[in-house]
Amino acid sequence: MKNRFLKNWTWVRAAYLIIGLLIVFQAASAAQWWGLALGIYVAAMGLFSFGCAAGNCTGPNCALEPDRDQELRK
Image 1 (spheres, rainbow, N blue to C red):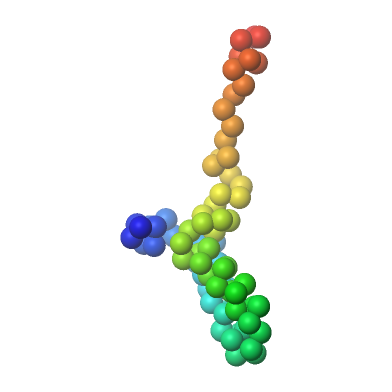
Image 2 (cartoon, rainbow, N blue to C red):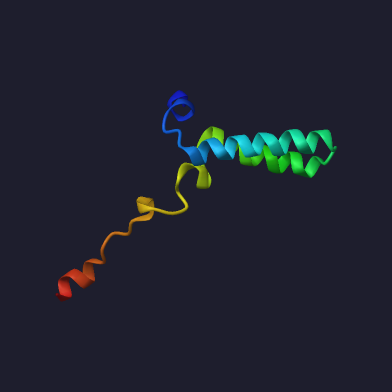
């Protein structure tokens, strides 16, 4: 768990954390409590490295295995 906090920081992950914290502070100062929940969620994405902040939305992480039936037909 400690490695999840300390390793694999990218600029996108840092941006999620910073933007989330800005949303939290702005929502708390304006007493917009639904915005507070949104900000906590976005900041948690950056801090805990899940969702798009972990780079799972695009890229080679979603690689599909080749269809075995297609290989046999060749």
